Length: 356
Figure 1 (cartoon, one colour):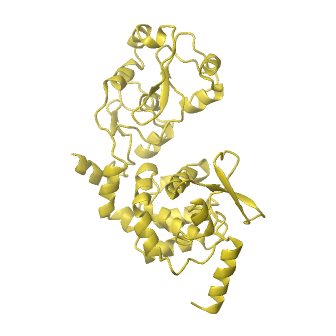
Figure 2 (figure 1 turned 90 degrees about the vertical axis):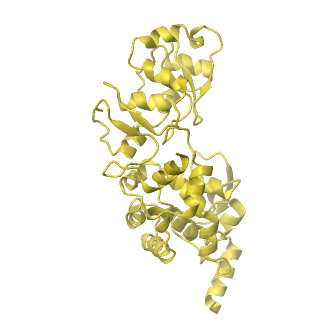
Figure 3 (figure 1 turned 30 degrees about the vertical axis):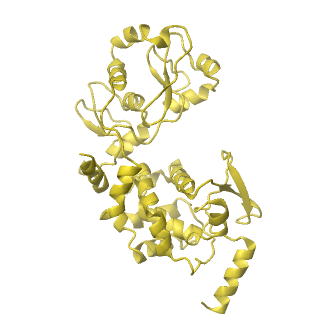
């Protein structure tokens, strides 16, 4: 290592420098190689890819670049591998470093895995929506798209990511598969494929007269304490009673009316019908079940309410137009993004093959 580079590294360490969202960073530590970082975090990157449809190659390349192979001050002391700043909605731990401005706030995590999860969720913001129109194996498009969407200020950010991906063949994780993928899919992203009776009943209720009759005989309409239920993939919900309004539900469940609108994708004027499913938490980008066959007259919102999956996720996974009507008999993917030919991605086929 040159004397100049050694001196810079020592100064950076003393100043607590780290790679941040703006693209300003330190040199990677030569004592910890990128290969070491990849071996340690490739399974987590693949797990995030399966969960959030973000290429593992992109996540790993960003992790290498942003954390200096995991040994930046922010990564070591705060478990923050992606330089994520606090922002107004952050309620966790905080630390402060100089970046675009002096003493900026950065998030502190209990474990680096939390940083990976938060990074994925960060990219789900509308600002980066265009990225999810790209194929998972288009790492160059993702890298350039991140720069175009303003992820980093460094003009060479995209090229740095592409160089890292190609130098370490990270795209193998995206397009050819990896031995670790099956393990991750089995251990961390295994999903149930058998639809439980309760959700079948809910599905039957929607759009039918039997919904009201079933709800009248249900314990949700007995006037007693309302039962809070949980979907198989962890979202709390209740069934609507007669006379429920967003305001009355808010008082009863200690929530704000806007939360019901946001979590259920309904306008302020929406009135819940007897027996409707009302979510008390945000819906997810996947369901607990793999497929849904569209019934006559069913809308994406109704399907979204059945399975606790965002309508935007249904649109994205199935390459649909958000405003188009669904045809009866259409088979919709609720977990995996389909190819242009309507096929499951290679990693989904690997996992489903292991489960069958």
